[in-house]
Image (tube, rainbow, N blue to C red; front, top):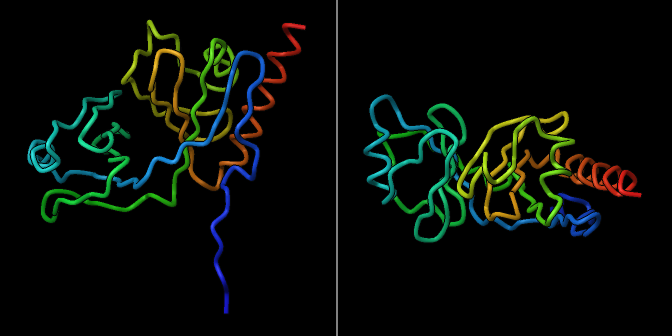
Length: 178
């Protein structure tokens, strides 16, 4: 019989601090994907106790956040979904499907500019902003969580790739600074 053992999706590659940047794994808690049926966005927001955020934004709720995740899609993060959305939305638990790491520090924007084709300066990407984008070679999501930090989300199967890409970008940043 197979025995399953929980493992670190980042393979021990996080946390680290280098070149004015830090990267650490985030334990987001439950992650639930929601796609409201046609015309049901307001009803879903009411059921969740918060209006669903507009494209490119996140909102705080009682024990977590709701992140825009694409056209007609949102992620509820941090708390188990305790409302019944039957007839209102398609719902799927994504807790084991996605991972996040927090990338912060004085040079985090400069480092991520090597991996992400999005202007992550706070003036263009303020706290609460969210973007679905490419992270080097994989699809991901970036969420601004503080003026000096973002969360980078990728599918769990790409966690080690993300950790390696972040480390490579940090090494390049260190070399450039000499």
